[in-house]
Length: 175
Image (cartoon, rainbow, N blue to C red; front, side, top):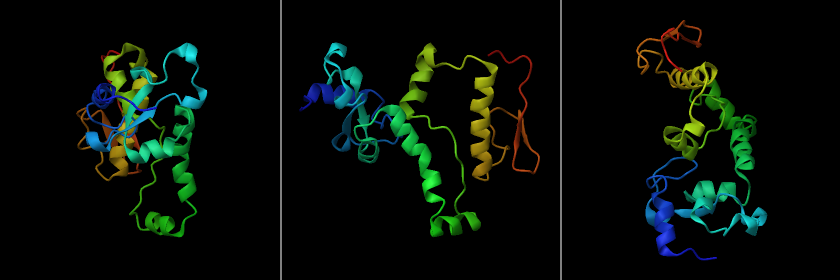
């Protein structure tokens, strides 16, 4: 079903001209409109499948890889990529020469991080969630060789030389 120009423009603006899944900037002409909840599982009781709430701006790569799958199936497909690549000879060479840094992590889509900024339903609600978020950031910094000196949290971390980042959360931090 064709999507009218007004709806298409609204979909494009949903995440500021970025793919809702990977977060890369996309030109309006290159945007593909993805049905967040696939048409094959859409129930008319939920309303029109082409309602703006079910439409997401997507880059070609993400839209083709997601296909007509649910969000959780797409998340699993993305999470499986490192495992699928591990047996590749060139990948093994890249790891051996440290051109490739293995960094498996939970898959969080761009729209989820954007909604977390404005929607209390997605907000971090516990010290454990905050620690997971911060450690994910720190692991990423260590994996890219940037270490802790550039930590935006002004020294709540230290690299003890073992590749593990230690996060220190002051008692007065309010979660």
